[in-house]
Structures are given as structure tokens and as C-alpha cells.
Image (cartoon, rainbow, N blue to C red; front, side, top):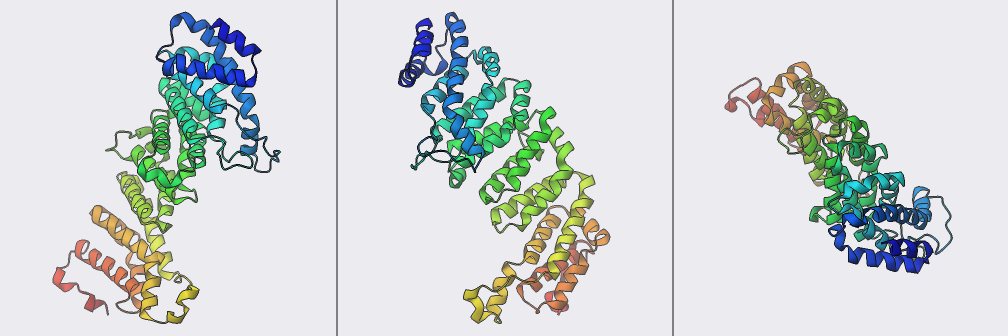
Length: 403
């Protein structure tokens, strides 16, 4: 190992790259790290991190500043694959915790989080600055660090590590592969759950990651974030975190309600699932019911979507009316209310007696064409309320009575 350190200090860039290749192959993914080399390993790690910092500086700078004007061909990460693989050797070893102090003295965690969030391609090339394989390896390093101790989790959160990981998975270009459980998304999920559970001193930073995902313009990331959130707040989940739910559930209500506005059916369903979880807290039932009633009231008065040019010729037909009603906010809102009422009948007194849900529903019955889709949506909800809240016989409630 002393020879390695000497050759490293005296070697060129190409020589260092070859030394890293030898290091990775010789120590077999970290499993063969031996105690007699500990002192040399402790000296080699800061050298590795120092070189990583130099070779990735331009890429980190241009990634952080979209206005950066790097010269063509200058923005690249020299020997990054070998560097990342060598770093993984340390954290894949059984005694990884012994090297963490040296790692932190060299600001290693901050560097790794910056590298994992790099986006973009090598200048004048379609090759990404950080390959998917390298990003996966960095994710494994971060996951190993997160599992070491609560203090390590807090250090990751203090550096906004959760956001860096999310930005990294977006930069990987595999946004369309999340359903296929690609390794990048699987590792991202594992890191976020590890960070978010049992990290009470960093709940604010962790919550920012949830908010970032739920408010992102990419629907797939919103759905991914909603799935992570469900794991955190559902009492039947293995990753349920009671402290996170207790401190953040009030802030989650408007976030989950906002997801109902999505045109994606899966995201709407996940939003209802989250709201159903939150409704298990009795003190939130009144707030959620009130907001749902406001949503129904607003959507009842909202105008239908503008006619698309290709449908202009059928604007005044029943077919176009049905098309517009399918896309209307009211239809989605009334369906959402129906699902919640059906799943928890205890909400009926709050929705009907306290929040006056029947008023906007009756308004739709009056202003919409009888038997139209929006009319049916309102009538279905009213029928459910009459049957299960006022408990009138089923035979006494029919659509013909609503005409």
C-alpha cells in the first residue's frame, strides 16, 4: 500500500486511473480490506476524495448554475467510474465505519451528494456526465452511510441529501422506468425511507423532500413521492413514522388535496388513499371535510374547459357535453367525496350537517341539463347521502325524483 501512495502522489492522471482499477480489482469490492492496511487506507481515502473534487468541479459548477459558460469539451468528469468504484470499496467493507471520520474530514459526504445530483451531458456529446451505473454506486454509498447511525442520517439531511438523491434520480433520465423498479428508483426509494424514518431531528429537511416531490411538474415523481408518503403515514406500513405524522399531518392535508387536481387517474387514487390515512386522525376530519366541501362548491360553479379547436364543430352536441363533463373538476371532486363517504360513514354528519355539502350538489342539479354526466355525478352523491345519512328506504330514492 505504501507503494500505491507513492505512485499516486507522483503519478499522472492516466497512472492514477490505472491505480484505481488495480485497487478495485485487488480488494474485491471491499470484502478483503485487512486491518494491517488500515493506516494506509486512511491516508489513501483523502487523496481519492481530493482528486474527485478536482475532476468533478467544473461539472458541479455547471450543474448548479445553468448560466455557467463552460468551454466546449471542458465539462466532464475524468475517471469518475474508477473513482466511484474505489470509494464504494471503502463503504462496502465490513469496517466501513472506521473510515467515515477520514471521509468526513475531507468533506466526502458533501462531495458525494453534489456529484450524485449532477445533470447534463458531456460537451458536444450525448454521454451523460454521470452514468446511470456510477449514480447507482453513489446511491449505495449514501444508503450505507445513512444506515450507520442516526448522526449520519442527520448529517445527510443537514446537507439536503434527500433533495440531492431525488435530483440525481431525475438526472439519470430514467423517469419513465419507475414502474419497472429500475435500480436507480429502487435505491432512491430505499434511501428516502431510511432517511425519513427514525430521523426526528431532521424532520423539516425530510419534509422538504416530500413537498418537492408532491409539487413537482413531473407526474411520475409526484406519484413516487405519494407512495413514499403513504409508507410514512399509514399505520399499517412497515415504515410508519408516528413522529413524522404527528408533526406534519396538518401540513399534508392541502398537499394531498392538491393532488386531486391532477389529470392522472393513478395520482388521484393515491391522493384519496393518503387522505383516507389522514382521516384516521379525528381532529383532521373536520378540516378535510370542510376543504372537500369547498372544492365541490368551487367546482360546481366553475366553467367547463374551453372547447379544443378539433371539437369546435360539435360544441353544442351531447357528445361534446359528455367530453367536457368527463374532464370537469366537479366530476372528479364528487367522485372523491363518494369514495371517502363510502370508506368512512362517520364523515357523513360532518359533511352534510356541519359543512352543508348538499347545497353545491343541489346547485348542479338545477343548472345542469338533466341526465347529463355532471347531473348524474351530483345525483349519485345526493342519493348516497339520503340513503346512508337520512336512512330513507332505497325505493323512495330514485333519479326520477330529482327531475
